[in-house]
Length: 246
Image 1 (spheres, rainbow, N blue to C red):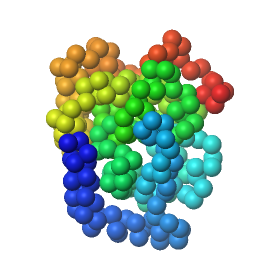
Image 2: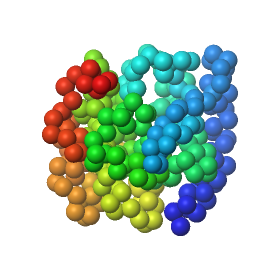
Image 3: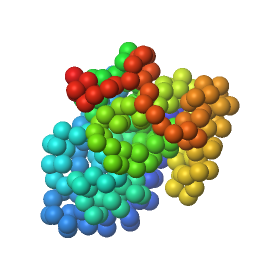
Image 4: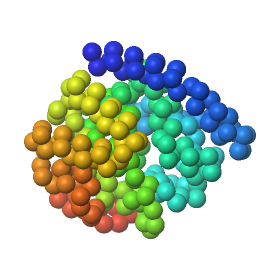
């Protein structure tokens, strides 16, 4: 049933979004005469690598800088790229990966191999399901770029401030996965475009109703300031970039 829903929505989504995607693809190509697509290697189900299709929002070869996390002020982002990222247009092309079976509409977001090598034993359960275009964490941390803006080491900031909660939200989703929850999260993702505050409140309320820990509900509603925290299954916070790269 989940796979049937994925295929149906992905086909409809690509058709409906084509009037917006095609002009944006042209603008991306026009600014530097390079492909409008960025094929991003990501780790998916059972730890297998797949090629995720994204609208390109950065300069050519930006991925060779050695930095995986991106702040809102990242100089690698092109002018058109800022527009793409603001309205999450790069996520729409991932519907192609849903059709191919690499991804699902809802599930933990796929990560780069370098980051998955840091996963604790608990976090490796995130690789037991197809990664998704959206989930709890996609709504809660839609402002990831703003969170990391100004951080001296975006990768370290991601691993200290965002990854611990993204992973917990992903694991909670896996434990409670159901078609009705998928439909709800797709709806809340759409709501977040209109009212982020209402969407965050609805995510927090849903987690609370399903028995999530109080601290996870607090973070999901973004009621508390993000501070360094260990990821699931770990007892210490990552303290240095060297530790992240190890």
